[in-house]
Amino acid sequence: MQFGVCPLSMIAVHTSPNVGSEMCTQLLFGELVEVIERKGKEWLKIRCQADHHIGWIKTNQVIAITQSEFELFQQSFAYCLEVTHPLMADQHFVPITIGARLPQFNGMQFQLGDERYQFSGLAVEARDVPRTAELVQKIARRYLHSPYLHGGRSPFGIDSAGLVQMVLQMIGIALPREAAQQIMFGETIDFVEQTQVGDLAFFEDRIGRVAHVGMLMEEQKIMHAHGKVKIDQLDHFGIFDTTLQQYTHKLRVIRRILPTMTAKEAIATSVAKESKVIISSASLFD
Image (tube, rainbow, N blue to C red; front, side, top):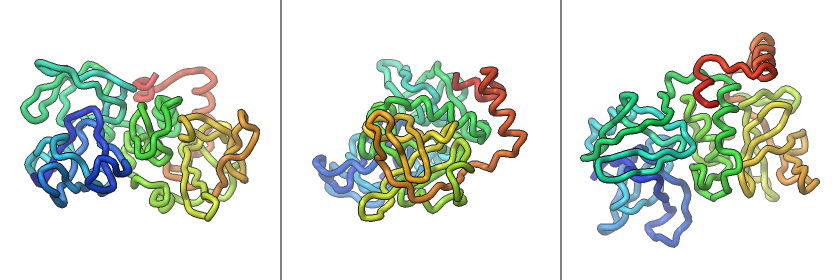
C-alpha cells in the first residue's frame, strides 16, 4: 500500500507504532494518507494529505487506493457540514462528523472502495464556500461544548489547534496541525481592539512555548478548547475565564488569516447580526 483513505468515522494517529503511545492527531472519514513506512503487518507510518502531519496508524483501519484515486480524491470531494450524520451503505451505517470528506460526491452518493454510500445531510465543496468572518463564526459555533481531547479533530473530542484547523479547512484555508506551526501564518495584529472575527490568538506556556490557540469571535471574545470548546473574554493580557475569575492563558500574538474587512463589510456584518438575516451560502449553517 502506497496510498490510503480512512473508511471509518475517525481513527487515531499515534506518535509511535504502539497502541499505548500518544495520539498526536486523528483521521476523519474520507481523509487521505501517503504511506511512508511499514512495521510488521500491523502498523503503517503515514503522512496525512491534509496537513502533512506524520504518525502511525493501524494497517487494518485504512483501505488502499491507487495514486490516480489519491490525486482525484484530493481535487474532488465535499465536506460534511452536519455535527454528526450517518452514511448509508448496503448493509451498514457509518456515523461521520463535521469536517469528514465525501470523495467525488454528486449531491446524493459516492463510491469508496467496494462500498457505495448515500448521504442525505448538508455538504459543500470548500471552493464553493465564501471566506467571510460571518461564515467562519457559524462553522466554529458547531463545535461549542465539544470535550477537549489532545490530538482530537471532531465534535467528540478536539484540541485547540485542531479546532482552528478544522474550521478554516472547511472554507479552503489549510493550516498545519500544531499551534507552534500555525503561528507562522497570516499577518500580525498589534492590538486586541483591532481584531476581527476569524483572527487567531496564540498563547504561551510558563516557559514561553506556543502551546495554545483560539479564534476571535465578536466583541473581542475568543473560542478555544480548554476543558471543552467554549467562549471566553480576550484582552491584551490573555484569556480571562469569567467563571473562574482569573486569567488562564498568556497572550503571545494575534495573527490575521482572513482578508481584512472593510468598513462597509464590518457594517454589513453588524446589520446582518442584528436583523438575523443570513445571506447566500451562510444559510447552510443555520
